[in-house]
Length: 309
Image 1: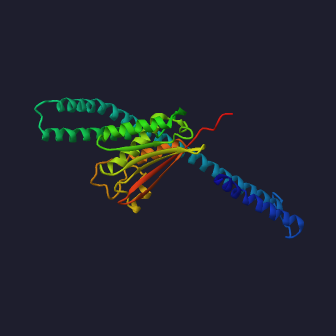
Image 2 (image 1 turned 45 degrees about the vertical axis):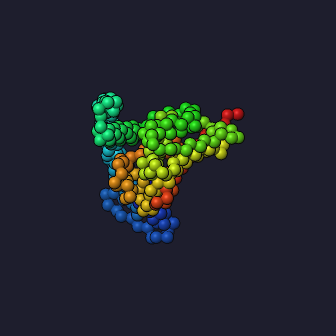
Image 3 (image 1 turned 30 degrees about the vertical axis):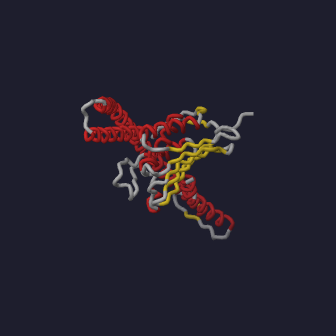
């Protein structure tokens, strides 16, 4: 559109010169002739001058477009190289930290079964285990984000009910002292399957549940509700936790953003950003509603596959 507009502007000198030449030929403007070694009437002079002007402008524009295209190609190549370097870095980081974190967790598990361990040492081991788990999840989320720069989304029929059950199981393992209410549509027919990447979707609901549990207390309620209307599947993750201030809500899906009322609570600010990106790749939507001091509801909508005849 922009190039077509500029090219149209380049034709203005030629069109203007033809208009003036036409006026000379029709007698609207008195024609005259310059004589010398070369003769040309005014109409011909203006026509040739306009064509020359348009040709010059077209040449300049083509040169500019060529240079602009080269600059864009160079910029895109550099950007692709930076993204690939970033992905390699996070893959390497994930690989290098996976084994040490596994060894730390195994060491903690073994030490917990030591008969002479004190309650104070047990508490220390619990904190170390929590921090090791937090670090492992942070690295995993960062690797997921880097991989989604150039996603290869798997599209296969998957059971949304099973995805939610897996996400809830992972959340319960991370917060064994917390209760999660899972309500999946069963009547008049079971929750429909969806088309998507199973592992990515488990990450989405695991992160939503992790936030719901992290920013609430054992006495609060956390619930997952799922249903479909034949065209869309809707999943709600709701909690009665601390909620999000109104001023923070427009930014919660940005990478590394954390609300003003959760700075004292451990977190990375990547969970919602990752969930948002994965849902967008699935052509779905994600919406957050929250009231500070009352709780938060995150609603995910995913398109159901078209029914086969």
